Image (spheres, rainbow, N blue to C red):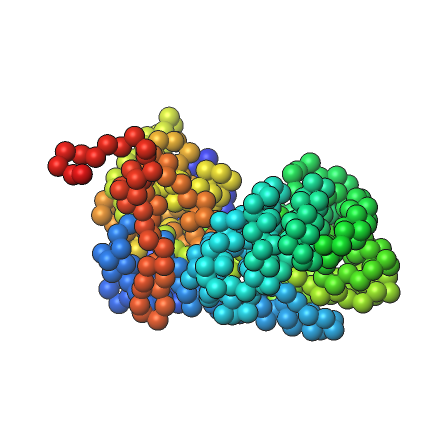
Length: 468
Ligand SMILES: *Cc1c(COP(=O)(O)O)cnc(C)c1O
């Protein structure tokens, strides 16, 4: 079979060993036990499946903590090299639970939330409200009021209407609320490329050209304190180019704003990419941090202003590589295509309800049999879910041992970000539990849903005979 048939994407090569775990894609410490079973955080996949069932989200606590520490150290070092400091916010929307908030705040990160629900989780975890940033393009009056009431450190303003709403909420409570202004730098970056325009046709923030006028308005409102500009240029970004272009554009406006009052912080958002498959080669965070902060410092020097505190908001970078989803294979079906070729469909017991990213973005993942190794030649497969959509794909194309069979456990790595948080009950499939592993032990950090949970919200369900 040629590597360029439509069956096989260009990036995918037949591996020498379809049992091997690529270190760039699997969580640090993932390995095969002597009997060939995948172990994550020192816990075997078969034990996890027996104890907690499948599908199962597995999060390696040690890896989340290590990645949070590493990001913190990278931005601290980059800032210190230019005589400033860094704030690192964990973007909670990537994966939020009280345990994960505790891990990342233990490791020195602040937390970003984007709704009243996310705020409630961060607060329930005991996060310091002063170290919470509140985002969103349509925060409700109730959400704003709650954020002001609990004393969140910064509210990121997204529209003219919101300036007035936050000012009113703060005035009503007799407090001064620190705010940032989200601007569109006109740079939109994705993976290797970025697009730079004067105007962005999207819903978030203010055009950069309006920043001075917007900040002038904020500065007239006694219940608001303007803390700085904020910008987020995209997600799953690999190089520094998009960040550098955006930083240059922002510092120019930051400098003009500094001429009429102190501007403490410049927040450049998140978006740092991770490896989903063996062909992804993300830039190390140390290199990104050093490059971006150096660019900010150089732009500031050119304009004769001090380097502000720099803030960043990694989400996926912290949790993505720490997560693995376990499934059980239910059916294996060779599908004969028109031209004598066959694609093997491997159906698992989850799908787009626990990982919407392939259906939403055409996201690519990889997979391995977790419950055993095999010496049988590998075969090209497509891993699909159990939902009523042909787009219900888990892994579009992968080589698995050709004897993959019902009852095998399948593991998909790099599912720690935007899988649990984007999960749904499509087809009334209960959401899987989230289990944390570390140093050979496992515990539930988010309980899985049951059929009773699902029925409990249906107001038309009648008590069955014999019950009250
Ligand atoms: C989503 C988001 C992030 C995090 O993005 P990642 O790609 O997960 O790093 C950071 N900041 C803002 C404002 C966001 O919307």
